[in-house]
Amino acid sequence: MGFFQNKVIIITGASSGIGEASSIYFARQGAKVVLAARNIDKLKLICDKINGDSHYVSCDVSKEDDCKKLIDETLSKYGKIDILINNAGISMRALFKDVDLNVLKQLMDINFWGMVYCTKYALPHILKSGGSIVSISSIAGYRGLPARTGYSASKHAMQGFMETLRTEHLKDGIHFLTVCPGFTASNIRNTALNEAGNMQGESPRDEGNMMTAEEVADHMAKAIIKKKKTLVLTTQGKMTVWMNKLFNSWMDTMVYNHMAKEKDSPLKK
Image (cartoon, rainbow, N blue to C red; front, side, top):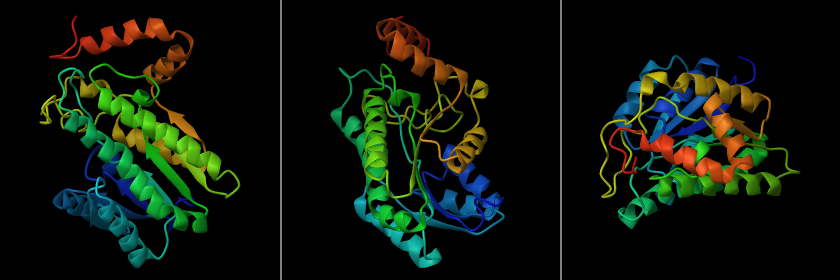
């Protein structure tokens, strides 16, 4: 309770999944949480559920002006920013040879540029508070996943950005954390884009056997307290990162076969 008490925490992509779970988690820890997403109705419902100090802002992170507005509204409401959690993101499932390039652009605009915009405007204030910048990446940021070129590229870019920023501010007393949850039960696969840019509408995986968003929020909070640089979650996720470093060519086959087992996979079995 003590560490997050009265901390001002911005969470993007807060209308579902890890963002929603994190908003509720940190509010219970005594933080003042600012929820950001495009779906304002869902944000209102989540704020109603939160037993604590919360505020919501309509924000499309792919728009720089919206990200600036998010930071400005947070400062107007609370006067400071302690932690920024860049969680907003979308996924895709389509072979690169079939996909409309606008799908890849949309993923980069949300997953990468959304993080860049929010970080750019929040950074001066987090430097003042000596706080944390957290970005939710993926195992796909370590290991490219077939039929997810745009998603994998955006997460690789995110991790390179965070590593560089952490190094630039090595002497400034602020904390950077990159979180790679592994497969987590959330809405991201339901809203994943197909080759034409339409939502696929249902998850191709068994969501019931995945880590919960609430578990991710708990692990993330502990990593923030310990000022960890990276957090890789799930046994499968950790093994994938480790094996990819040691046996990269062999992992091409393993990852291909694993992803080809998904329902209606575009990969040849």
